[in-house]
Length: 446
Image 1 (tube, rainbow, N blue to C red):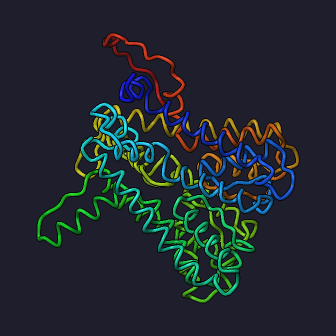
Image 2: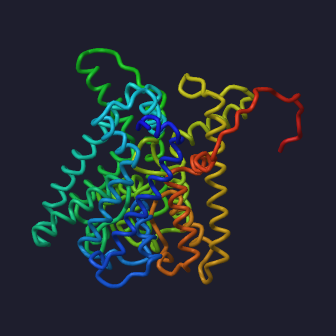
Image 3: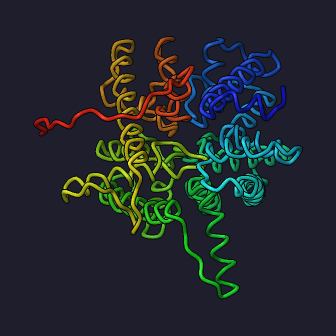
């Protein structure tokens, strides 16, 4: 049976789910090897670490220093694979080595949310080029800061690890003391922030920005797609609103002892980090409770589709807001930026948000039963952080019970592939239903 035929037998959602599960399994096997561990680690903690790295979450039940250099290298590869997207990498190499035909390219286009299948190969190539370039430049800049503090080989490894983790929105670092010990290093803070921003904006949007710059250089008109317009406008608004609200909440708290320039830089850093990566310049326990609520909302919305981050995605949230606007205005059509949104995408957006919130509520409920001694806000934050691949924690991850760790791992996987995609992946066979409609009848609402 040909490769094209094999790939066509499985929906893209199933391929994505099995790819993640297999990668976690292989990663857990490698991390369970004695050579990967500095000291003996329980199997569940090994699996948890592999799941966290593959889903670019960053939550750990044990210190990362419990793993040897080999173990940390395995974690680094898991982050890179999980950040780029397993299917993106798979289809890139397959397209480079063989011509899989229209069916396979359509499948890649569906996973990458590309409407034009002819763009698939270009986007996959762009993903690889942008990733290598950003991570290489980031590594060089960070190495310049770390070189005097570490042996040369270790400085290169820590720099590469931090650059990949930042670009892939993993929020994991090997820096001594974490980012908080380097909050005064402008180079590391700015480079980390830029890497996070590039990864979160999405490769399709970067491709269109490149096309726009080329068209502008050639004095030709260029029109952004609705997708990129939503991502660019939405990301700008989200970053501005997050920064303003964060500064209002924290300017007399964690920002009180910082100068004007440092305060602005820290605010920008957090505005970017809260969306998906989860790097912190200070302990989360120092934040205002309202800031914790802000973090949960921003991370739930997340970043752009086709990016290294997670969440329900900013385009989904934009369609949701447009639907509310249409309902309030009494309109039966949902539109955005001069374009009508198809009813199927409206339904899908509502389903993604509802299922996402439903899972967070369900997992929080279960964790409140299995975990004792933690406050409601701690458990809710843990559940939301796992689902949105934010990776932040109020410090309870290491104290979770075995069942609690399983719930968090499930949230990581569901959040990474999307609750709606998971349901599609679990459908063994689609039943063909005849197209018909029932008689219309109204019910009382509100």
